[in-house]
Image (cartoon, rainbow, N blue to C red; front, top):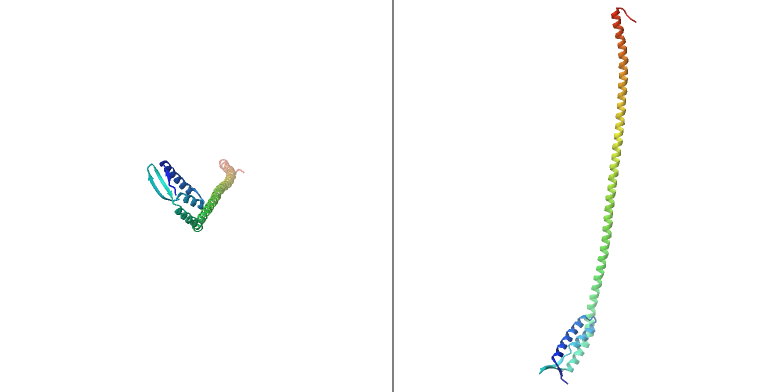
Length: 198
């Protein structure tokens, strides 16, 4: 096996590539692609030593092959028993959350509709009550005016009857007074004359 010479700038660049590969792995959605990227990043080296001015990395082929076999065996198993069920559960959870949000939105819209109907019913009830109150008030005023007019008419009739009675009593008194005056005048004349006038 051939040893590789790496300068410090190459080592720094390898660290940056490893960090960007890790970020890439976390962003990937496919589990198999994630595993392949992770495997490529973790490919072991058998030995690494620092020499004058450089880093020597010697890859171990057997360990790499064993890791590749383990990886190829574990990917389908983990995919079958871990990742697919986990993704299914997460998908079902998202669907339940989406369904709950839809139901909450529907219930909110229904509550707004019911509240609007309630407020309109209250407005209508207030309007009807106000109209009924005004109608009752107007009817009461009409009844009071009618009763007052009837009492006024009755009072005017009573006053007219009283005037008529007074006029009749006055005429009767005048007639009576005239008769008595004539009788007194005859009696006075009879007394003065000493004889009966007649």
